Amino acid sequence: MKILIVGSGGREHALGWKLKQSPLVTELISAPGNPGLAELGRTVPIKADAAGDLASFAMREQVGLVVIGPEAAAAAGLADSLANVGVPCFGPSQAAAELEASKAFMKDFCGRHGVPTAEYKVFDDAIHAKAYLGGREPPFVIKADGLAAGKGVVIAETRRDADAAIDEILFLRKFGAAGQRIVIEDFLPGEEASFFALCDGETAIPLVAAQDHKRAYDGDKGPNTGGMGAYSPAPIFTDAVRDQTMERIILPTLRGMKAEGRPFVGVLFAGLMITPEGPKLIEFNVRFGDPECQTLMRRLKSDLAPVLLAAAKGELASAPALAWDARPAVTVVYAAQGYPDEPLTGSVIRGLGEAGAVEDVVVFHAGTKRDEDGTLRAAGGRVLNVTAIGATLQDAVAKAYAAVNRIDWPGGFCRRDIGWRALAK
Ligand code: AMP
Ligand code: GLY
Image (cartoon, rainbow, N blue to C red; front, side, top):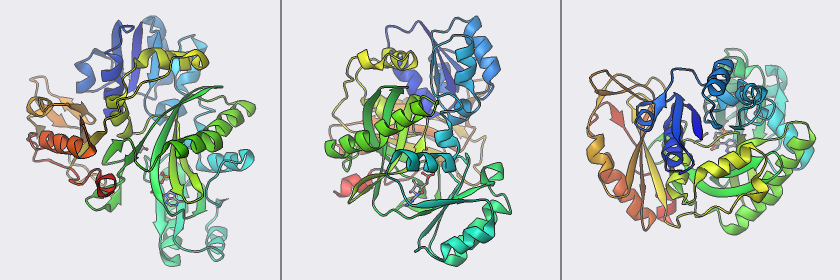
């Protein structure tokens, strides 16, 4: 079958790299894709959130499966448009994507279905929001309701900072329409993990967990980002924690979404805080994590195509079990100078061939573009994802940085301590 991957980042390149290895796949097409995906197949210049155009294209091309990468495509109703033309789609409907697109919806949903998460309240006016802080303990967690590319969360140590954050979101509209409402919630102490489950509306299959590094600079300093690096497995995510997460979070959510008329199809990404009372939900995403996905794809041994197709068709209950490489995988994000605030684009990148030649390393493109003469340039904030697998995490990290060191890109920077938390154990 032909597979169409929607999106243009490192996550989509990693999914394409994995799907391309499937004997079921005759052609891999991506929209809009990137120079990495272009090495795997055709790219078509249709934007990820152009739901109608993508559906017409998929129908015309007789695509056998569409795989949605980014949340914006799901929130734009791509799965609904594809359902209308009868093309199987791995990814949630617009109604199901509310789990990520509205934090207020997600929190109220958790309340209705007993999913453990932090205490919270939703506000659309600053006066009541600030008054609510009076009865809570710092640090205060203040979140824009809508999609804000992972930047819509402020953790304030003082009332003054919290008040300022409320004003910035509700009055100054720092996150635009995403900040029409805010969620204020209690701070959950603990260590975070990202966990993923494949869903077909009724059945969920656990994947594995990963840990991300959200801050821009070494030592978890600097501004929040979409993620500067990841590794899998996450040592804190034991089998017992996984079972609790399935029983208390993933399965009640799947049942609740079905009961509310929004059956969830696709990958459910639970951002978790592992607390002494067990895993608690920080947020849901309705897609693979980026860069967590890159580490998962390096570790997955089974063919990905049939299982994504089974999820799209509501047939996960009879899908074969997935096999994983026990070895750890790591991804180092190489970002453009200035990321996340104002990444400098256009700088020339050399040495990817040399980097990819390091044993057990694959370099995924996340934000690149190629000139007609073949020159590769930075075209986004997070630009490259250098991934490695190794006998130990230490070994994987060493390989990844050996590859990073072969990349000739003065316009970029990366964290040098990816994996530190797990290595310190
Ligand atoms: P989110 O976009 O909701 O994942 O939040 C971004 C980051 O803020 C998370 O990865 C956590 O590090 C942190 N965070 C969000 N909510 C909480 C919370 N209730 N308690 C502690 N940290 C949080
Ligand atoms: N790496 C976190 C995310 O994809 O939201």
